Amino acid sequence: MTVAVYPGSFDPVTLGHMDIIERTARMMDHVIIGILQNNSKTPLFSVGERVKMLEEITSHIKNVEVRSFDGLLVDFVHKCRANVIVRGLRAITDFEYELQMAQTNRVMAPDIDTIFLTTNLRYSYLSSTTVKEIAYFHGKLEAFLHPNVAEKVRQKVEELHQTSDM
Ligand code: ADP
Image (cartoon, rainbow, N blue to C red; front, side, top):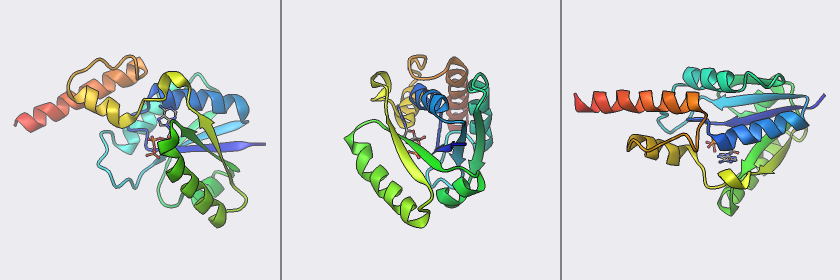
């Protein structure tokens, strides 16, 4: 049985991430989306909120599960009894960092392979960071996010605007 872990921050999950999740689910027996907790950046959404959002929008894919983790990715992959890490590659700029991570993980855990899926060209420009900037300035989000996620991002940004007005 091939079990894959797709790790990331998913803050918030975009249509680019969804495309990778759907394609991975078609190739693997089981897919675990791993949401990283000990992120140095200050996230827009808590890990709990991100887990809930991802569960909601992947509920139609039967072999996908959502979990959060902290610590080393390879330890989480072992805990999941998985053997593959999936990462998305948008552009050459992603490549150097991703290659370094994959090689480091391979030294730490030779039983785990990293595979890369090239982005659907429709989403190759898309990042969670850009989406947050657009949201902050009240731009339209539907071209980038699932409608439920877009709504939650709008609400969250509204809350932030209100607290910064105080
Ligand atoms: P991280 O902080 O680990 O980079 P992200 O949530 O930004 O987490 O991304 C998780 C994974 O999804 C990474 O492999 C990243 O390259 C990939 N990814 C991000 N945006 C897209 C996109 N638009 N299309 C395809 N893959 C993407």
